[in-house]
Length: 376
Image 1 (cartoon, rainbow, N blue to C red):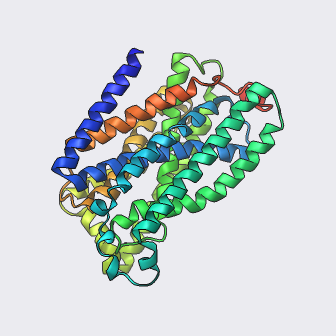
Image 2 (cartoon, rainbow, N blue to C red):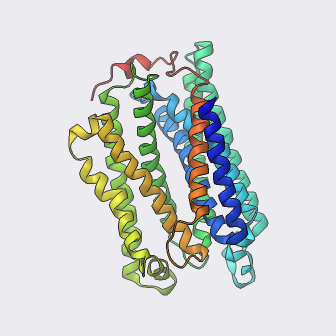
Image 3 (cartoon, rainbow, N blue to C red):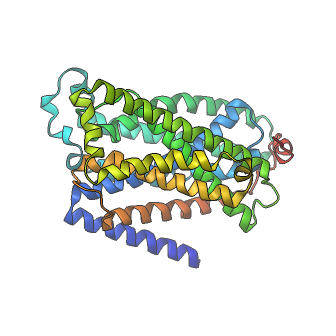
């Protein structure tokens, strides 16, 4: 019970710091909560997405540690609650609420507050429903020993992947890009997906290293599994950089005022070093560090790289959201610390609780033996 009390205490402290921010600087504090809530939601969505991709592709290598991304998916209600709390104060955070009459055509229809809130509700409910059904069927297989459940979960997973592609794109447009309603990027959604997947992989690696070290997965996870996760992390951090460069290069080359203002704001004054650090943390460092095979097969070395990628994801979200909330210069305000503290603590607490509700591995999955003897 002691770790649980510590977790509740840290989450309460983080909530108190955010509440202080709502009094002293409401818009900046809401930006902090949006950053934390969006990060937490993306961590949960990564869990559902990863499991769904494994089912849809018929992959067996990941079965041995599938309970970990399933437990990550179980944190979705907490992320949804933080997003809902931000959207409850949408007029304070989103300038288009007050500028609605200045828009014309489709943008006027789309950026309508009631429609905006209805869309957000639909997105969150669909994600929660699919996450619940996929995890429930997966765990039900252990109780019933029914191999037919694999086909049922596979169908659910394919359905989720289609729904996710549409809803996550629209959610990233709504919740993040519309903070600056006069700026737009046609690849903003895939950029957010790349960040979600690479940081989700990094978080998964950290959780697996921890669970392997503390015992639950010691006999089930091998260097072969870490090697493949390291290769995925190497590939998707590079994919993130490819999308980052594509977005930046096209806007820089076209030099259209409505588009370039986004990067001008994020490269001037004290934002410039953070702009460069974002690339270093999310691509240059993991790219160079993960090139040797030994790093990908050594858990503690791989965990160090994963830690850097998780920090890089926070910085990436900070750069996307904070300048749009009227913050003139980058800083780490108490409500920023509070939002990070609360969301991280809640994630770890809910993850651990969900992970303990089932066995460490899906014993009834017919592909488990193949996963345990997996070799690259």
